[in-house]
Length: 200
Image (cartoon, helix red, strand yellow):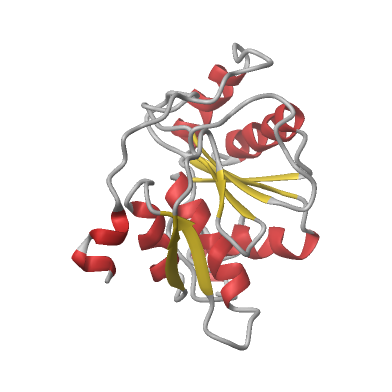
């Protein structure tokens, strides 16, 4: 089964970070989108998600694409920050052993410029039983994993953001040489996104 290597990588992620579940996707942006969408679909009112003004541009885009609204705050952050009021964290610039915090949804990045440093990839670290199956269907076009298209029934309107086996194999190899502790990445001079016309 080609995607068996992705499952093995997810299991290694859980052992390394302490998370109950790890859902591998093609980017940290996709991980954030799925997490925000999980909560957005379970609220009756328009959801507003607050993030720092200075962050990577795909973060507010993920929030908007999940049908939520963005608000901004002044915050000097390093490594990770919360998408308030949700228990969702952008941890693109953090990846270290035992990093998982109980009850949270922590989105990590494996991209070339990040700590893992492979071609691409990200994951959701979490411990919510009810969310795990939903994330796995959503990353795979709303389809059931391990089922051929002719025999499949689509469970939801999903996204196409699964991690490819070739990427998972790179990540699994890198994990075998990963230090137990990594410092957060240094601050990056992200622009003030609240001033971008596209977000007004």
